[in-house]
Amino acid sequence: MADIAVTAALTSGGSPILLPKMFGEVSPGNISDVMDIYIYHNSSSKLTGCKVFIQPTTLSVYPGTVSAVDDYETILQMGTDGYPSITGSGLYINMNCSEGFPAASWTPFRYGEGDLLTTAIIIPSTAISLLTGEDGEIPAHGEIHIQLRFDVPVAWDIALTPYFDFQMTRD
Image 1 (cartoon, rainbow, N blue to C red):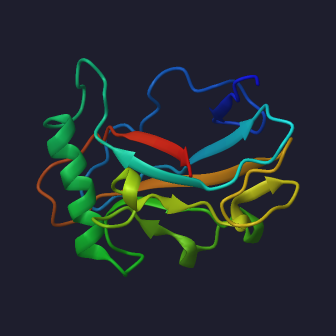
Image 2 (cartoon, rainbow, N blue to C red; image 1 turned 180 degrees about the vertical axis):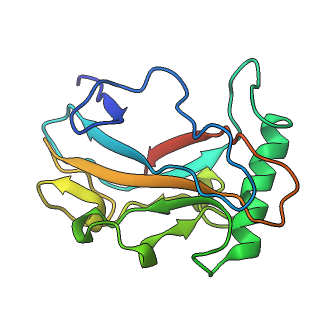
């Protein structure tokens, strides 16, 4: 059986993301630009059990604000403190492509949700942008489209340059 290649791109059907793509520096009281991520694969069958999570970046030289682990912990703490308010802070994901990414669909990564492989967030069927499927699926010849953004609260004392590894996994 051939290996399945799963591709994450910044455009629909685009080339793989080869370098870390980050939001750049985000100052207190600001929201980053939205990052669109498209995920597709080369299998002739649907992929099932698909989920996403973040982890500290594995870059050999860390270009972020403090350290890979400290910045990762900051991202999760911000999301945990601000939840369930959509005006909180931290790293947010919106997987409601089918409805045009409404504001109410932004959810923060936080402790216990999307912070570990064991708490990965199931990709909902609303994220499928090509073809149709069920929650947790990427259809054969299909694609999912999600968005990420980073919010820094006004009360934060420094600008942040968040780096993290965004991962997709399957059951």
